[in-house]
Image (cartoon, rainbow over all chains, first blue to last red; front, side, top):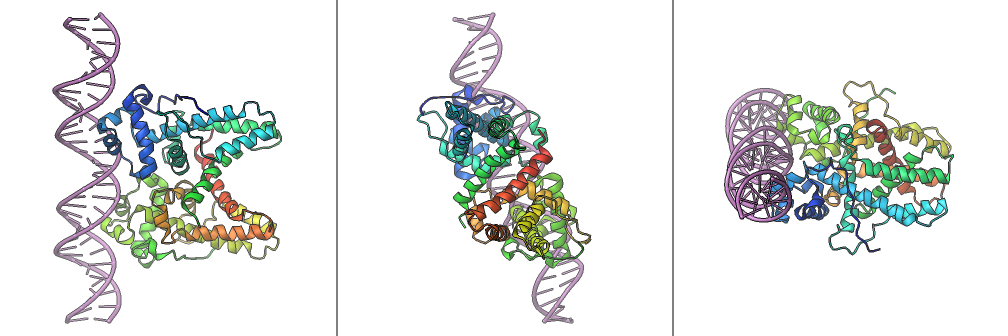
Length: 197
Length: 197
DNA sequence: TTATTTATGATAGTATTACTATTATTATTA
DNA sequence: TAATAATAATAGTAATACTATCATAAATAA
């Protein structure tokens, strides 16, 4: 695969659209690199600023805080994954094969793209596995949810759920199953990567 | 059920055994209350100290940091749960019924105990659902794991896995399945509690 | 072209956090 | 009674997570 796609994430996540400027794109790119390298807890806006030879104040002009920045990255990922699901399901007629293709996508790393300006897919995969629960396992989740910032994840779940239902209309919990597939995939990938025994 | 049990967790988790003194027990009890009330991110040793009318320095004498304190609480929970599994499986002969009893335990709140000095089971359940992944989804997980501080969780998984294997010796991934049952249960309970749509 | 808006850089400052260290006091045990 | 240990009281530090101000450079509009 070789094409350039960009995804518009909910504008409430950022203060200023990072896709609207070179420095904005650099903030996101370097944030991804740093979260991969140091882990989310050890990333600060100051470190990101130093990496792009800019200042903390500039990073704060794009994102309210670290949590929103992670949310932005994850939303980008979920949008991208939903796009890939649509793409891969083209011309797959059997519902069973569709489900198989989806599980295949979810349980493997995203294909690396050749675009120079694209985010590092390996790092993104890693971040989704190890950091994604941190955006919702917080006391403020209900409040944060009001801005619909989890919509891309929900949309993906809904899409998978609809295919589960199409495959077996009798199955009662397609939405639970779709989020279970996604979360279990992350969890098992985490165990394999970091926690061998 | 009405009895008092206490669990010894790996001594590498604490600097000084919190069960060895009244103030130690108060630290853990108040930490549980505060994590439930404020969420792990908003709890500080200073806040715990104020709640027990003591000082930060005293809390630091028991636990190296907040992460270890959470680990202590979760280990206590996993030990308790494994004890309950053993307890509930007494006299259940069929492997199928044993598995059912385990799923039942994992997917429901722990029974509240009447002991005055016991930790609040409702709060504990809540903390396990929302905070437990934070002890291992950190960059330092491999390093932390060297102290065997995740052993109670692993032991529980191993126990469930052995019952899965006993029920169906042909099943290839009993360990994956047992951690999947536990994690999925938390995840789905979280969605029900905090994230209704 | 000039004026105006906007983005960024440079710098400063603040409250809070996550600790470490020191000394005095109190309680326990030898 | 002396020695030991635990805690309280207090101070201090580096880092974090911001907010604020002002100057300058770049883009755009009149």
